[in-house]
View (tube, rainbow over the protein chains, first blue to last red):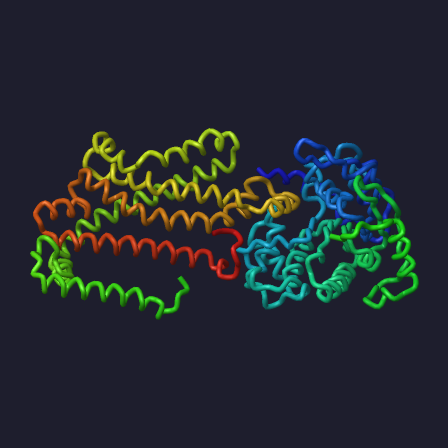
Length: 285
Length: 257
């Protein structure tokens, strides 16, 4: 009796749908979404009338200052919470929070690896959580270990791995779920600048390697450059309560590389987004 | 437990020194054997009474092992129930804490009245004493589960039981072992006390009988066997922990105490 059981089977009906071109309904369609955060006796609004769509295979980045509700939005899409108002449609149909559980693959800033599981068992835990037998989950994880640059580290515990490797294990755990939508909440936020740059390119390569099965991505980040470098479209939110300040389609050709950041078009997109975000408060954390 | 071998030398040396002083002082002062036997006499008693010590030690060890097993099963099961249900937590957990104000050994005479001189009342005293550290530590361990990790697993589609099995239970094991290490040492004390109150066999019984006969060297020999039993059981729990939780060598302070 797992709560997530039925939701997963539903997800199997429409999922990895032909990624290339968004057909009639977008994969994810968020309308008039408002949410608040309860702390003590007070209710703080964090999202106000947000609309957002993500097509199949599309990469959308969500940027905004702290407190603009970016992470709350991912929690809502993942089915971990209910909005105050508005709806979240998957493949055209409206959904409830329990119905969304397990539909998208969620990855957070902290790698959240289980310290008592080896890298291989950690990569398999997402499948196990969804009801796959341990043996099958491990076999699926083992098959993609070298593709993720982890060959030889199957038996290592998280405490023995570097930050970048731990994050790759977390990515593998997410990728094995084969969901049509990845929710990434600052996946590189905790890494040093060089590892971070390497991981951004690595992520783009991984997505390209998926071909027709390329999942859509909804990425939350503080970093405007990261958003422009990775995304097909960047959505900027205002400070709390978050509203959509600007939707910026990124017209840079793919594949994108580190050098792309010097492209004049890149600089224009970055400027437009920084202007939309307005004067940022001193801290970016 | 990772101590290098030579780290055992200073305490061993200290014990050897103390035994030497004891031996010399008793011989020089001509202290009567029934008052304070020298270590050499205790060593001889350990040898000559080995059949007796083996028999009574076996009885005590069985009480300790059965009581400890009962405490382990009951303690972890109750902890899991407390963690799973707010209602049970509110109703039962304060009682578990309050039960510690009852001196468990004081219950031994009652258990003697109800269950007689046999094995059962001893096992119950041992279990009652061992139960508390195991239960409280396990509750702490289950509560320490990382909320973000639990939310992540829920997002993967894991139900309550799957989240418990994959995250909470393995995360609580270091805490269970902390409780078990404390429990196993006090369990030996509990067994001896229950035997002192009334028994037909066991090291506690042998102690009182030998003391009444002024066989003081035999009393000391029984104490040595009891201490060895406590240390040995503690070591076994620590070994089991190292063997079952190999990952703990690579973490610093997360997931347990």
